[in-house]
Structures are given as structure tokens and as C-alpha cells.
Image (cartoon, rainbow, N blue to C red):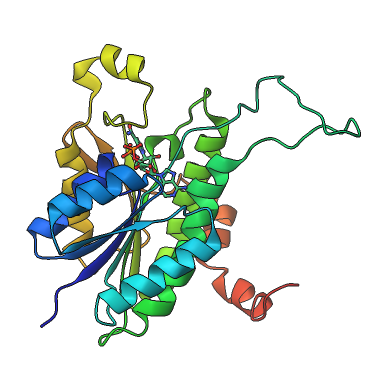
Length: 276
Ligand SMILES: NC(=O)c1ccc[n+]([C@@H]2O[C@H](COP(=O)([O-])OP(=O)(O)OC[C@H]3O[C@@H](n4cnc5c(N)ncnc54)[C@H](O)[C@@H]3O)[C@@H](O)[C@H]2O)c1
């Protein structure tokens, strides 16, 4: 039987790289997608022939589309896992007042690169993965999304990051049960603080040791989702060495309970066709 194939975004560093190494050791072949070309190429060369580096900016739909096409062909028409992991912090702060103007004096838009990378690219990646996973010999596969504990709580320094990571939790919960019917399981990890290149260097140096979540917890979460086909639509919080499965908030009354759990036929009837 051929080896399973993973596409991991943000694979040149941090969690993406750790998961890449773990899967390779477990007999997977891994397509490592990252904007960091120099590092990515050098690391992939060290990792050997079962790793393929692709220089991709996931915020470009075309580049992600090319990535999935290439990965499916490299895998021998097979694609088993999409780790939607690339993510960045806010590139401009909504709470600051550093307004810039175009030549007509109109306020320039806020830079939303964090939304493009952390959210839009994940949605487009799922769209693309699904297209190929359906063509597997046994149609289906797994998607593991890297949200954050900022997707469950909030990070006042990074409101756009917070919004994008919250959106990934909602996306996972909404999509997981539906795609499960197509044998595609969608789950999300919400890590607490894991020391990686994402965090400003001086903060890394000062961060209290007792609040650091080790990379082994990230790997534990991946193993949990990869090893259990019954999980889809789940969000798991990673803190220290523990995994905490987090569910939606409690309903305040019976009406909200009904709306969330028993009104499906109303919505399904209403959204039979996309609204233009
Ligand atoms: N480190 C933490 O404490 C922490 C906590 C919760 C969630 N996360 C999330 O974990 C994920 C992985 O981050 P990390 O901590 O390993 O950081 P990292 O900076 O070490 O790795 C992120 C990788 O993503 C790549 N990347 C950035 N923009 C990209 C783009 N447009 N296209 C392709 N690749 C791109 C970077 O080059 C880098 O290699 C991110 O989604 C991050 O938001 C991190």
C-alpha cells in the first residue's frame, strides 16, 4: 500500500515543522508549504526524499491551488491530511491611529494580512483539499486546523488575530459534522503559548517556564485526531501537557437550545441553493 500524504502549511518552522518531522517518522510523505523559501528548502533537503518543500504564500489562491495539484500528483493521486497551520500575528493594529492616506486624501484600508493568512487561506485550502481527497482510492481524509487559545479567549494586543482564530473555531464546529458525511474529518487545535518564531524574541526570553506548553502536546493532539475517525468538528485546547476538548457555550434558555439543535430542517430548506 502507498504511504499516506500530508500537506502542511507553515512547515518551515515551529509547530508545522515539528508535525512534519513526527509524520515522517511515522511513515508519511509530507509536502511542506511555506513562504520561508530558504529555510524550507534547506530543511526539506535534510529531511530526505519523503519531504517535498513548496514555496507558497497561502494568501494567494493561485499558489495554494498549484500546491494541492502538485501534492496530489507527488503523492501518486493521493492526499490524506491537510494541516492548515500557517499563521501570523497582526500586521497593523486596529486600535492604533497610524492612519495613512491615498493621493485623494482617502483613508487607506487597514492591513488585513493576518485575516488573509489565518482565515481566508484556510477556507480556500479546505476547498482545494476536499476536491482532491474525494478522488482518493477510498474517498476522504482529515483536516487539522491550527486555531489558538486566542480563538477561545481573546488577545487585546492582536484583535485581528483573535478574530481570525475565533472564526476557525466556528468554522470547525460548523463544517466538521457536515464534511464527516463525506468521510472528511475536520478538527482544530487551540494551543496555549508554545515557544516558536511567531512570538517576539524578547518575550520568548522572558516568558515564565511554568506557562509554556511543550511541542509534545501539539503532537499528542495530532495523534489523537489522526488516530480516531469518530472525531469531527472538535476543538481541543492545548495547555501544558493536557488536551481539553472544548464545546460550544451553554444555552441560556430552551429556545436557543431548539434553535441550535433542532431547527436544522428550517435552515436546510432555506439554504438549498446559495444566496446570491
Ligand atoms: N506559538 C504559539 O504560542 C501559538 C499558539 C497558538 C496558536 N499558534 C498558531 O500556530 C500556527 C503555527 O505557528 P508557530 O507558532 O509554529 O509559528 P512559526 O512562526 O514558527 O511558524 C509559522 C510558519 O508559517 C509560515 N507562514 C507565515 N505566513 C505564511 C504564508 N502567507 N504562507 C505560507 N506560510 C506562511 C512562516 O514562514 C512560518 O514558517 C499559527 O497558525 C499560529 O497562529 C501559535
